[in-house]
Image (cartoon, rainbow, N blue to C red; front, side):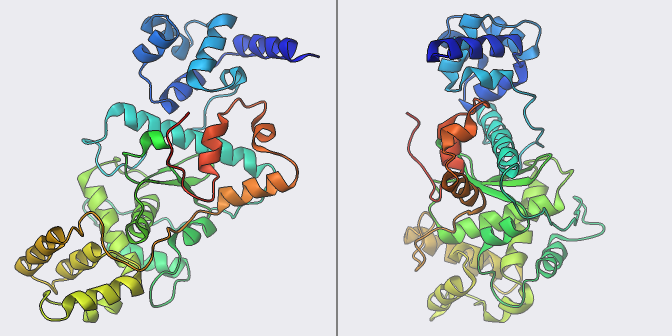
Length: 368
């Protein structure tokens, strides 16, 4: 069978079994509104809406145009419904445009689908996260109490957590970097039918802040199954969880300075390297524990701004913690003679996104 005949069969199959939900997923992955996609294929936005809702089906020529515009293979549209995922926990819904929220959610669906495919061939750790719900009023548990229980659940002894991403992956959480199209969004997390997922910002090239991001998102996954994503209370609770998780009060409290006079900055720098957290996080922790007063804290943050440390702090660690679950699975597939295209064949999923998700280093180039 020659390639042209095979391609014709693929188009025919994709047209016969066209799934509008997958069109919506592909469109959102590309960061396009319906009107933009319609303009690219020279059709009406109403047609795109009808295809996505299932009210109508595109013909074979249109399926080919959609595949080309959205950088997927035609067979992508013939698959089953995309994986079900919860709404992602974003740091701020107000500052996150709807189109970016949709793209981030679709990327979560993509990660869930790829992970499910890999699990058919590669063994992953069982999902093992504590279930420690914290409601907005904190009637039964506080974020700090949840963090203490989580440390005990994970078997973390006294002292700093050595590798946050590895801890999450051992608990069965998929940790990946986001695609360049949503790099403006901070780290976010979501639950899927298969596994919880944490998605990190590849542009945020800071070891110390990245560790706080991972702990923050773990907090959401552990505490906020039913919380409204992006809510101010839930975000503050996740910050408090991360602070206690990374810097237990009964361990770090006696070492935090009451002000930034004398050798306090040197002391803070030592604490930063020992606990693997930012100066900003240490200062915030000192104030939250009542060790540093509001005036001293404000003065410290002014000094941080004057030194340019609000954007980029000094620190010894220059390499990020890296995910290993998906990159390791991809390496296993490659060693078995199954390259990316062969692995994704039949699914129609975009190879470039799989390369980003399963890379051993964050990729921040723009899409070609």
